Length: 237
Image (cartoon, rainbow, N blue to C red; front, side, top):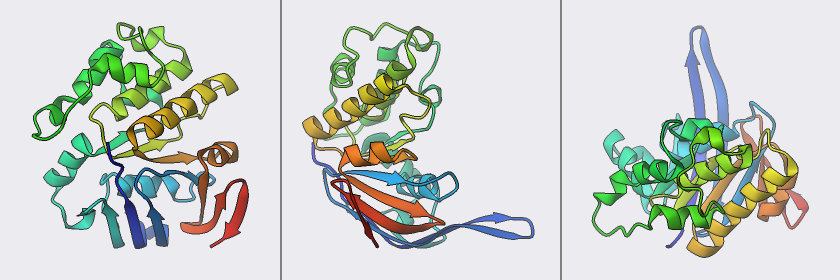
């Protein structure tokens, strides 16, 4: 697989409310190369989850331009954006349970996530068991959500996110509320997806250690890019 490039140019977003609006993003410029891993780091309310929602096409920016691969998301219809999320953009929401059906097996969850891509010409899909092996869950396909440890649940959510072999994987707070072992297992699964498939990966986190491990970390504060870290060193932007 080939990862998708990402480009944000002067992106702004305002949440409308009675009596005014709340500025979540203000003039964000960001470039991510194909196959790169990037951590968006910042405290709660800094705008990092809003930025990922814009990259996923779950919302439209109030200003600026968001490009994923050759697609300008602002120029696509809702149906076209939805089709991208089912084929070329994988999304893992915060909280493993939000990504998985509790009554279905892990393997069935992966299969259901492949359904839209299965009907799209030119897309070759892996067997669900092979995808589970990719994230370190080989032999656990028959398990259900309640039977998995917290770290394994999150890896199952990652498996669902990459089920359709997307070129871009967006993961929101995958290590929150996990112990160090569970955190390392989830990060290893994400790194394996990137290494073996070339998938571009964007991870939202408040944990600076996660950002350092992914190699490139961009800090978001008050809706703006404030610093960038590479190899453990921070640079003002």
